[in-house]
Amino acid sequence: MTTKTETMDYDEVLERFDPVLGLEVHVELSTRTKMFCGCPNAFGGEPNTHVCPTCLGLPGALPVVNGSAVESAIRIGLGLNCEIAGWCRFARKNYFYPDMPKNFQTSQYDEPIAFDGYLDVELGDGETVRVGIERAHMEEDTGKSLHVGGATGRIHGADYSLLDYNRAGVPLIEIVTKPITGAGRRAPEVARAYVTALRDLLRAMGVSDVRMDQGSLRCDANVSLSPKGDEAFGTRSETKNVNSLRSVERAVRYEMTRQATLLSRGERVVQETRHFQEADGTTSAGRPKETSEDYRYFPEPDLVPIAPSSAWVEELRSTLPELPWERRRRIQQEWQLTDEELRDLVNTGAADVVAATVDAGAPVDDARSWWVQFLTEQANSRGVDLADLPVTPAQVARVIALISEGTLTNKLGREVVLGVLAGEGDPDEVIASRGLEVVSDDSALTAAIDEALAAQPDVVEKIRGGKVQAAGAIVGAVMKATQGQADAKRVRELILQRCGAE
Ligand code: ADP
Ligand code: MG
Ligand code: ZN
Image (tube, rainbow, N blue to C red):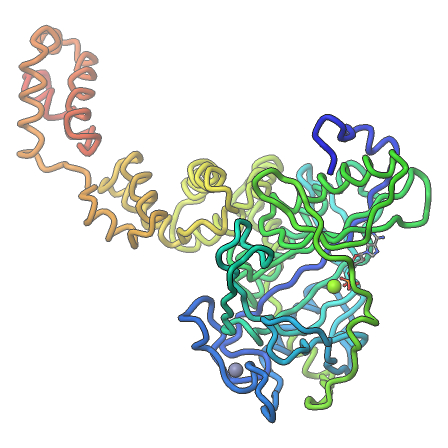
């Protein structure tokens, strides 16, 4: 381990080395059932309730391929501009791990369903980088282990481990990039922008709920360095468990610096998996990297090959939705946004949710300001991505509507949204349970107004004498007394009435 003070400065890293990246993204498909059996594919649930002989790997149980998962795989391949294989098979990837009861993972190896594509990725300043896609293949997820008793949550030091096979056999697509070269200083940014673009694409296609925080989209980041100008790639590390967009960027940057520090001291980079630590943004060594020989891959004998006809592929191509970047261009025109406004939307990750909020009936400007300001602050303070906040565009649209009809003030609206984020239910439920509605009922207001008038006789004199601006002080006092729940416009009217200044 190197300490902070010995670590090479980022500028120096780039003077001496060129980074090469490779990103592997696993995405869980949101099909109704699992990849090779009829068990429900649903996040959570009581442990070991979504299981059957097939996904538990019991002897004699036979798998059947989930057709709708194959459809999603082909659509993803097409969205990534890939070739679709006319014929391909599954393979067994053999290894023992307690969360994988068959002792092999059914995956694709040298015959992926989709290969050789690209994704155009837009960076923060509007520049576009083309990332090559090597392949997108089908496989199944493992179960989950919970190691109890240790300090780190890892198996080392644990007293015992619990296993939940609900996730075993959930359909996964692994999308692997070609080596990304030439990104230089911007490598961390490119990595983040790629995962963002991929997530947006998958979400638009409706094939996955792409929640990095729940693990339905997971990214492994491969990083290596070559001495400046050297064509040959250096030895790579593979950082696992990077579960937010921000972490992807931090992990790549950390690895670049760590490796540069090692190399400049004449030490070697070890080819290994590493773990990213959210808390301090560092990575730590995992296990040495297996080679494909270690896995003893062989074609899965229990499943028939997959041979999509070109008619089927073309039919699936016609179901591709408007792609996120096309939608962005259209939104920019329709909403008349400047390049900079569009970039703000895209950079905060708000474009999709704002569009969905507009679709739910909110005016564009309101939808934009809610997501780009208040909700972005909330996401940042919770360390999650905007789209992962537990509030839906429809709920935000509802709050905006309640504000514009006067049922809520802006301040109350924010409180309602905080209630939704805290899991208290829909906006209307939060309003009811927290008692947040604006008070515009005159009888409820007059008591507070009379009290405020009595407390400030000098102000009353001014108003009576024609200085109506002075009413502001009384309005403020009433708003304070009603904890911001009064309808300020109505309060002002009532004050002027009572002072005979109308
Ligand atoms: P593995 O089975 O080791 O995970 P994959 O082929 O699935 O290998 O993924 C490796 C990823 O790393 C790919 O995205 C590939 O383009 C990339 N890659 C390969 N060599 C290097 C390297 N020297 N430096 C950085 N990335 C690399
Ligand atoms: Mg891999
Ligand atoms: Zn099952």
